[in-house]
Image 1 (cartoon, rainbow, N blue to C red):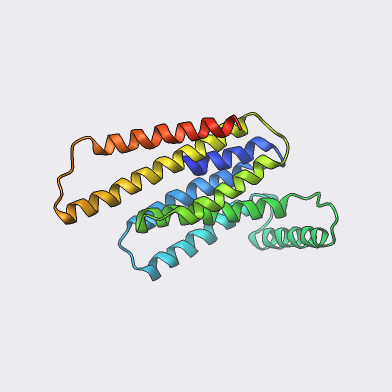
Image 2: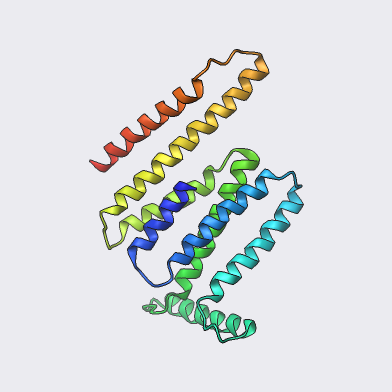
Length: 212
């Protein structure tokens, strides 16, 4: 959750356009809903139906805020579709796109599904890495383009550190399960020692990256 929050907060600091906060809202809701669905004992089919239902509702709700509140849902849909088509045509014709709807919808969709996938895969399978890698790549892209706020280093470091801590925690839980299956004795404080080691290594990596 901290890793995803840091990536979306980095986006909001760019001030590239208005309504960037909606990306963060979708990302945070996505990871929380993904965690809840992954923690249930629902079958894959039921889980996928829930994911589709929540996706349609959350994305529809957030995207509708880009239009006038006085419009009906059908009018909102037509208005958004018109903007997206116009922006896409301008983009494909290598012309400047002044309207931000296409960019916002793209970011909202990517972060929603990446965050939802990360939360779901974390609690269901213990493997949230592909969605986190996608978010990490997007975060790097954010840092390449102006404005170059000093805070970009902080959010990149926070993302890296929290991801490493998650990696260490999942490694310990997997190892703990294997030790118990083998009947091995688990020393008291191993959990803390592994977490501390990962935190120190991660902090050192972040410091080195900041000074390169």
